Image 1 (tube, one colour):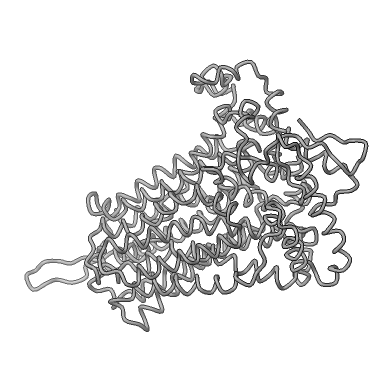
Image 2: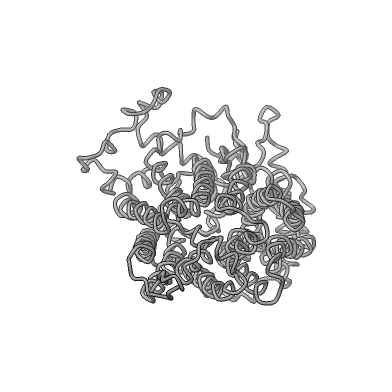
Length: 640
């Protein structure tokens, strides 16, 4: 199944898989692996395909790279990055900024929107949840779009979709128009973020930039948190300086339009991904794009090398047998389906992925972010969302001060984690963050439950009016800040990393696609039930519910989620071994059936896998990596 050397060491017999010859497996850092896989996970309707552009990232040295990624990035001078590459990274990162802005702007615009349109609680919830529905619908097609159209082109097209969404929202005359605009914005975000991640990771894969790859790719994750902060600052500026009644139009419409326009203008001057161009056969354009992102002092020396690599890659494609139909980037050869491990075999990984995808949203973080002004209005002013809207302009600026603090905390902690994750470990950060979220939710629920009200005034009729005490104010502030901090420490930057590292290369795309759709669907449900839950069951009810679910998640993380740093995802034995040594999944757990061989509880249809040993499954999973290793042995290939 692997690539085999012929008499001429510069040539290879290419097997039926479509291998990419423009990248070295040992030039890739862990951050690039996860970001890249998150794009390809959506290709072909949910990421069924795992072609060699994914498998070449799993050469068995994740552990060594994980330990050196941070130090290599920090030790190199960012001044050596060509201006074109730096600008392309910044412009593409606006996709993350738009994503965070769209999620965070709901909280800042909610009071103004309710005041202007007279929305009910359930309608206000729908404004938030329809964005996540759009994400859930579009995400499975994001990888397909960027593979077919190109990474840069996909970003430009989605900027047009963002513009359409901004116009629909700015000129919306009724509730249905607002929902349509939010849905369109969600669809645009689902595709744009995937294309941006792929674009930056491929530009940063050039051999002169591998030391900077972690920092460059991390700008997308950091820009998402920055988007939250920008949305809160924009809401504060609208409240203080502009017309409050119609301010939501500017926040939803003008803010989105401005960011999309800046990205479109900037990206229109940037090169397309050289890897995508080479994959599609546009080798002259790929060479030109590589020159633009190569340091000026190295261009002349590298021209012949770049041209040689592109020519050899083209020759390999032309040299394939006419009977071997090349696979499109990210697609599946369904004739090889029997040789690829079924996702059912990795049911333990699937359970962990599903649990983390749901726990990420049921901790209530998205509602703390979206409805922070409502929460603070309830605890500081004893208003519900409708009463706060009636008195919104008088109190909104004070409430938004606290949300700005939340946005700043989220951004700072996320940035810290991105640079320290390899040093501190995935499991430690997950436990610390989930524990912080759980304790903070307890404080937040307590703030709305305990009878600590102070007498505020006595009406003429003798009726006593109460307000929440300073103790409850403190509990609410600590609770909200703690939830945001804990999420930024754990679920936000860590979950996708754990998912990618637990999943062997042959099923990583499908596993990441499964995770993405499930977490966005859960987010839509959680967003849709917050305000109505408070109306039906009291202000404290959602927080007690989130606390209970978060406590379960915290216990599950302690018992069932292993440390995945240094795990080679291409090695089934490596992944299975850390699960076997985790108490919840081991045969030493007398309360569970998890220690039994999977085929004994496998549904009908898995019987043909019954007699396959773990060693055999490991051999199948590592077939792609063996082929890439054969490429690396050739002295004629120095691939970027």
